[in-house]
Length: 253
Image 1 (cartoon, rainbow, N blue to C red):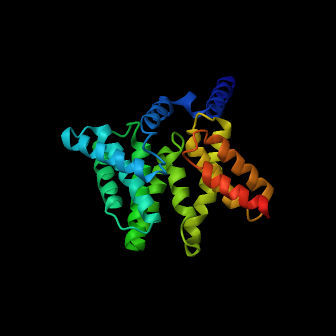
Image 2: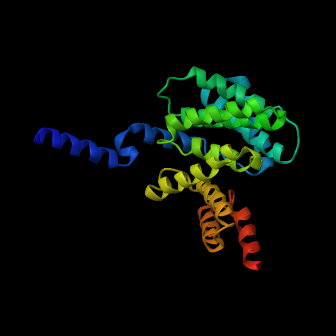
Image 3: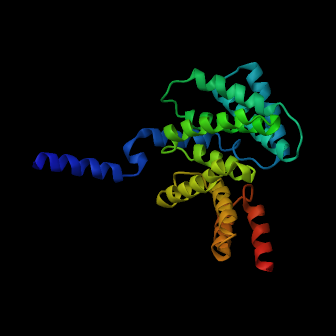
């Protein structure tokens, strides 16, 4: 009986530890994300274009795995901004195809898989936005669910990108839109438990999104979240300016 009690206590204690204390996958994923931080969540299209030219040249010359992954993410970032500008582009398709090939080429324990899977799902959603095909949107959310099930303990990207897609969907897609609140609150909880879980730039976008959710019912809480978003974006290249604009508008009322 004592042996069983000790075993139960040991397992309970282990489950309460931060995920990085239980698996080296957490540490490897953190390092992988740092290596790609200069091409994720970009807001300056001129910088994206410059990086795309360099990356396409590198992939043509040597086709290394990491160069190809960077290119796939850059195609995604380009497609996202061009979509917001209502400009047509083949970059969503190019991102999805390239990331699909990379996903099929790596072993299940590869530390870049959380990023590949999440950006691949998001690229599929961008294809749907361009084509208007609901089947592509449904498939994107299937890919997101698979990525979240496998990697959300190790990486913020499956929930972050799914939440980002969900919050921008028309209200008719209310079942999918609910993932914005689910995913962003999940990320807030994980980050406030362990702030090594996600990069501060990424979290600035999370707090901005949470502020948008909150502002309908709790303006004071929304303003605190906006200030948090601004503080996390110390280099002012993520959510800072959008959060500042929303805060200024709120304070005028």
